Amino acid sequence: MLTLNEALKKIRPLDEEAMEYTRHRWNTLGKPLHSLGRLETMVTQFAGIYGDKQPRIGKKAVIVMAADNGVVAEGVTQTGQEVTKIVTENMTKHNATICIMSGMSGADVYPVDIGIATDSDNPGVIRRKVRYGTANMLKGPAMSREEAIKAIEIGIDMVRELKDKGYNLFATGEMGIGNTTTSSAICSVLLDQPVEKMTGKGAGLTSQGLQHKIDVIKESIRINEVDPEDPIDVLAKVGGLDIAGMAGCCIGAAVYQVPLFVDGFISSVAGLVAMRITPECAPYIFPSHCSNEPASMMVLEGMGKQPYIMAGMCLGEGTGAVIGFTIADYAFKAYWELPSFEDTKFGTYEELD
Image 1: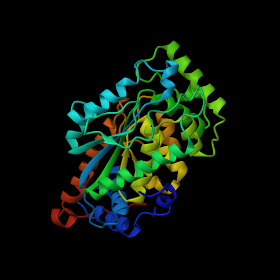
Image 2: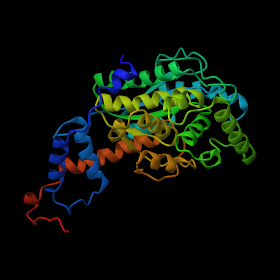
Image 3: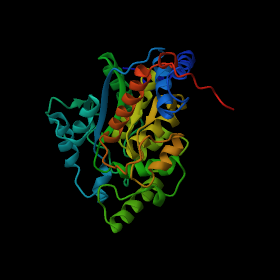
Image 4: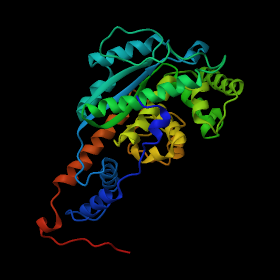
């Protein structure tokens, strides 16, 4: 397994020659120029990522990072952290939402125990546990810097492992009660925005519960003396192992040259962390949708990304990201099956000033 520093040295820019070839081919197809908009850009970008003038989508994988958060002890969630393990194990039985939705795009779901508070004996859950949940960030750092880096490295290595098995399109998902609290804390620090602006009710808090959640996040940031210039410090002190693992997946996508769709708010925060660690991973990250969480669009803007979908979703698990897979399927279907201008015999379109 690569160390984080070793991985960062392997990231390369996209293949410009492959992208130029793909742009030109789009312009030969029998339709108005650029009329498929960002679908054309997506295929072109995939070509640059793969370094291939004949890009094709192969097997698709959703990596779901599962971890518990000690801050749940402060009553910032509606449910207890036992739900994390239950839902993660349900993913192996094909009765979690992500499994049902992933079937539409032919994607396989890989739940990873990177920090669930208890052990699972379910053989379908991949064991990569860094620790048994994070500490309560209101009482001190959620984890050590070394643990945060270890979780990032596990995410990087999960991409390697699955690419070696033939997967070439990825998505990140998460399962972890309390992770909207950690996500709001991270993006408040990294985007230098008030906690109130970055925090929502998550999975069903009352207005009073929301105010308590805001207070807990504010105090956690204060007592931990979080350094906004150091994304790993932010991740370690007020983040979660699931977010760290997904950040690693985003970096791993750049290391191993595969495109990756991030899911909603929590996954996007992980993408933001990854881009703050190494901006060079940005072209490999695709924003599937804008979550219904209040800060979701601000996080995407902080990443310099525009979502493909606005559907008011906020379920998590990777459910928006697999819809991104389907959009990619549409884009590649058009790219490879549209006839050329020559074949259609109705003339060509020309670039206008």
